[in-house]
Length: 342
Ligand SMILES: Cc1ncc(COP(=O)(O)O)c(C=O)c1O
Figure (cartoon, rainbow, N blue to C red):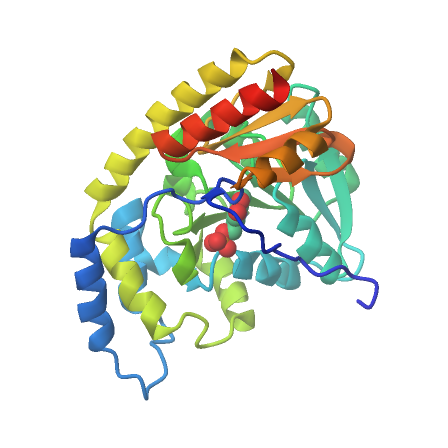
């Protein structure tokens, strides 16, 4: 562990933050009042509800799934770690896509897992049959992937996800952190497969990244294993009550989704017009682009108070990931990119 690098979130003087795939809209005044009222009712001297009953019920209604199939966590990050601890013994193999969400690798390494990377192709597409063959020939215990993929925005069809679950002889973790943006889910299938785990979060479409609230959704046998490793009071009372306010207004989330869909088309069409940029297909709330000297472009954007995600090396060399913001923010970054690359 001494050689391990900590996951640092850099502090910068940034006015437009398009680097973490967050929702660009803060809560409206009315909702803020409701949040304050519910926080006032908390018994601050008491531990939170360890069963997280009400928030599981609220998420169950939002996602159309039985609350008995859900556990709540301090962000879905918490469960990535717990899944590794629960299902990996020393040197067991875990298959991770390259690229995919970086925490899968960080967590697997910390758990002593043996990571096998499976590359997306040059257009950042996944060959599902080859993936299944790799997972099985390696004798992997776990497969993690996000759909849509972070950071590429690549989206698998529901049939493809089901093919992976059915084809792989191991526990398959489908991270649906961004599923509201591609409309693809297998959440209705959790009781059909012994090996399926789904991760969800309130940090993206729901717009509650600050409260750290995520969920693991699976069958009762798998949740039983996860529960053994979860600390009893992992979701604090403030998060539990605020989460309920977020989730009881799905219409607000749908309205925001429609704005983001519109901005996605707007930004992607405009970036495609800028010469020297390759734009990868996206069905998420961000887009991955590739250009010469991305490091320099990144630095220029930072100077203009705009942050995007910069990925140094290997498969993501010269790639930047841009989260879709408000129209005003999107126009500013588009203008900046045109100026820098023009
Ligand atoms: C694919 C994916 N899964 C999980 C997470 C973490 O979500 P949370 O905020 O619930 O920990 C992220 C965050 O960026 C993500 O991109």
